[in-house]
Image (tube, rainbow over all chains, first blue to last red):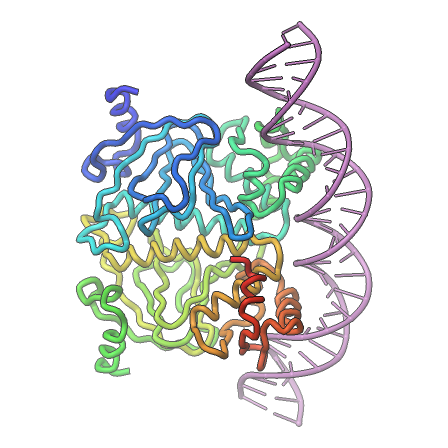
Length: 219
Length: 219
DNA sequence: CGTTTCTTTGAATCCGGTCAAGGTCCGTGG
DNA sequence: CCACGGACCTTGACCGGATTCAAAGAAACG
């Protein structure tokens, strides 16, 4: 990727979230292949990342060996913001993706005493908190059907296309929703059998009856 | 409460989290009784709150009528920080409590374009994100026993006294952990029957076998 | 003391987890 | 082009634990 095309990518995003003044140097264009690690748990958190294309998951291993998915990020999303000095989750590419790495200015750390905190970092943190709170509601649902229906609905709302693509596998969805991959598979199968959604293959679906899906998601 | 005693309360807390420069006016001392609402969902979020004494829960009603507990806050904790202009959770007093309300400076809003974000607000947001992420791990546990054991352990770690007091009821614990109140009650009963914890009454317990409790919590 | 609210306990049901087997998709190499 | 292998997904049967419904017991309050 040339500097020219990098600048074009940069200007394609709203300046409010990516101003030259906030992040110098402009950024580093990176490419990752399927499953590749972008950063590891405990790595120094001195950068923000913006997805140019592709999708990313953040995850973390719990003490009992289970894996928790922090969140999924898609084109245009910022990720990698942390309160402290190191990453609490790792990040992996869900498919091939293009990522822009932006250096955090030194002051934007909660454990320092900055005169000002960068607006970009602050906005990203606040957004992350919102995401985490939504994720909490999702996890506190008792029924697998509600969780899966809500997940599909959120994803579809994010892309607004007829045929929605799932960039993550069943195990990822399971770890995100606090279920097993078998339950994910069965629930998706039942939603399809009920004519609520229709899968063209295991990674692509369309919503046949939006109202019914909304009723199942209950939110 | 006189202004004198208010100033004493203020200086009792670490200045790093409550400097006069960050929050003017100093604060408003408020009292709430058991169950009383401190602020409602959708209220304007123009203040931060610090607990002088007592305990608080934040909660939110989901579309299906279930209630989700955001978190529990205890003496010295800050709560009420929001990314946007309005509260996404409501806050209620768990018992009688004394609270200090601090006016947010106008610039500390994510939807404005501040030259600087107040350090206090930034720190509180980052802390809140950490809390939410911990809460997510807790909710993603599959077994009720793990959830309850972890909850008790966290609470005990917060106070470091022999006899720990539960300021919240069983229903609150249930909504926090994504379980039913019956399951909470049964699980606590079994922990006591196994000699892991000992309840002097339904709101006060001591940890009889810390190692065993830690093993159940698995983290 | 009586009423209300909260908590405990019981029994039955159901949903999701677990274990196991089989199927599909895709890339690699013969 | 087809065979093979591996990763991922689906499906089935069984079991255990959490929910649900119900009732009784304990604590808080006026």
